[in-house]
Amino acid sequence: MTLHITTPRLILLPGLACDAGMWQGQLTALPAHVVASVTDVHTRCASIETMASTLLAEQPGDLVLCGASMGGMLAMEVARQAPARIRGLALLGTSARPEDAATRALREAAIVLFEQGRMAEVLQANLPLAFDATRAADATLHQAYLGMIHRAGATQLVAQNRAVIGRPDALAHIGRLRCPVLVLCGETDQLTPVDRSRELAAAIPSAELALLPQCGHMLTMEQPAAVNARLLNWLTRFIPAD
Image (tube, rainbow, N blue to C red):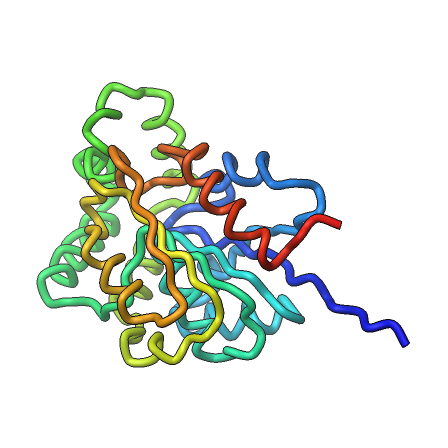
């Protein structure tokens, strides 16, 4: 009798108000034998918990999840709901902590501005936080990022910020993870500081931590080659070439 082992599918989970555009540098670099897709459950569900249950319902079988920022929060919740189905987690520029009071106040203030039609003003003011200072004059990168957020629009920015505000405390369960975990972060990430990634890696017995120098929060767009090198090497243990 021949034993058939199903190769898990790779699911990419975008950050807040992001879409497949943030993964373009990775999608074009994946080898042909890797079956990958970008989920959009974050655009259709009101909470991290319902995003996770929806993803599990729509994506049968074993999964390898790669989530950035809010996508990492979602990936951890998927693993909590269905640990037996998760073969591996890559957590990029994310945090396991619940929302703190100071960050919640900032998000609530931004939500008010989004609802007032001042989205462009908020995005422009916060643009320097998305990337390392060495990218300050990279107009192409900035336009790609801002264009993606504008595609999401104010309604999605409001809804997804509220979902992040209400996210569960992943520190309460990530220590039980037994699948391999890659924690990847830009060393100059201002939105999710590197200490959050160190905390993640320390809390998960099976985690490995990698830091990218001169790289900010949007690491998949800012340093795609460096992200690809780490991610593709890690993926070989789950999705080997035939």
